[in-house]
Amino acid sequence: MRRLAIAALAASALACVFPAGSSTGLEFTWRFHERAPASGSARTCAGALVSQVEIAVVDVEDPQRADTRTFPCDAGHDPEREQFAGLSAAFFDVRPGTYAVTVRARGGGSKGDLEVLREEPLEIIVESGVILTPVELSPPPAAWTLTVTNTDACDQLAATLRLADPATALVEPDAATPYGAGLPTGVGLGLDGAPVDCAALVDGDLEFPTVDLGEYALELDVDGRTCALPVVIDGHHAPLELDLSDPCQGRA
Image (tube, rainbow, N blue to C red; front, side, top):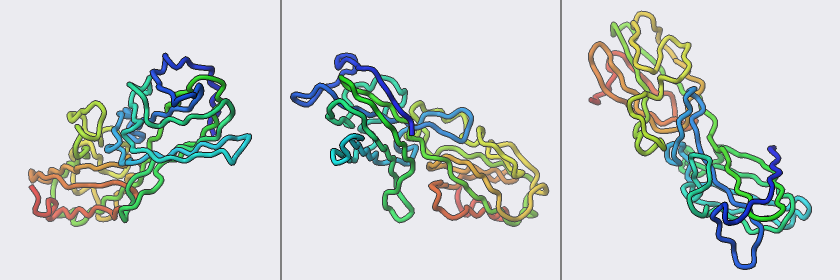
């Protein structure tokens, strides 16, 4: 648990509007960054597969004084971790004291339900004014498996993992740099577009242990045949099967 002892902040400096009669409060913003590549680009709510943020606030000295609210992810998304441009919807009117706070990022599960993708516990001391707390809510990376078969059916293979829609997934879209270029690899096949000889591969599972949650496209070039396969990495999908005798599966 992180402990935040934050000095009083003037309301005017935070551009906050207090509820009538209020002089103290808690305000939250959140952001997401890629955790697998070294570059760590800032992602949008959609890019991180987060749809809601739940915040539970409990008065440490009087636990019966508690409040839990759920917000649409975009209501408090602040990718630059700076002063939020306007009033965040995630505002709690509280009196001075010490508060135990739990912030949860929720996204779609395998059955369409919302599951906790990331949980961040905090302890915040409120003395006066409004405490603006930016929270890093990047979900942890998931393992992804690519099952390769018929490696003797080709001479050369290149695979590139890109975000399916960089304009939607990234705060500052960059379609030129493939996501897979920043991933560590030790399985004989990179996801950065570098070609490998098919003879160097063996049939079976290629494990990529740390890939950020998101929607991707796996671009393939197999002996000059090119196509892109959709990939969803959310920790629930089955391995992607890649038959090198028919890699594009009828796709262009």
